[in-house]
Length: 237
Image 1 (cartoon, rainbow, N blue to C red):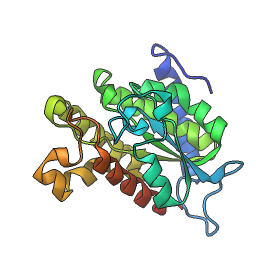
Image 2 (cartoon, rainbow, N blue to C red):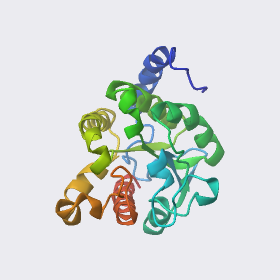
Image 3 (cartoon, helix red, strand yellow):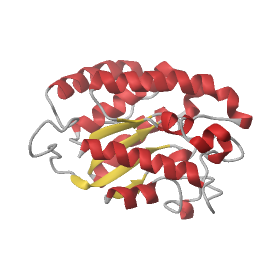
Image 4 (spheres, rainbow, N blue to C red):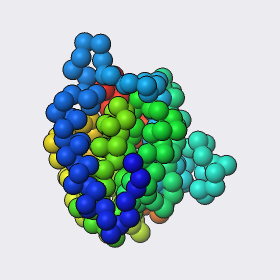
């Protein structure tokens, strides 16, 4: 499945959405209804791929100040999630990407690693595109995963503060639609936003979980994201 450009995407999305709904209704691995567990096909259920932006990459975690490839895997939620889940968690985050980037890269990630589960977490960078475009692109990624017999799991966007506090209205709107999409398609959702805003440290000061620039988590925030993903994975398999 090649990625559509921005002008032709919506035509692709309609057909892909129909495929997604058909496969979900047919029970193609998005929920663990079988007594033997999900059918992963040729995929490796011990492999989880995390697809997203700089937050998935782990920038501004301890000693990860840039998105240079030498820093991949050094920080973010993937290392603690691997420890918590017992799965091999592959960091496929690309800094600066919006959900169009996810559409462009989802097939490559699925075919390269053949993961049992793909974590999809896009993106405050979609603020310029709007929440409807974000949801349309998420539908494309979900359908690609289901067609590959990989279970898609969505994540909500973490809150923002400080210099980025003005991004919160978009984040809240996007998260409402992400949660609704998970309900509609019977997908598991890792609600990072809820985990952050109900955390006692965050309530005392958002900077307990967010970096000084107010958009990316700090080390404690990434650890909380890992816990939220791990809890969600336990509901999957």
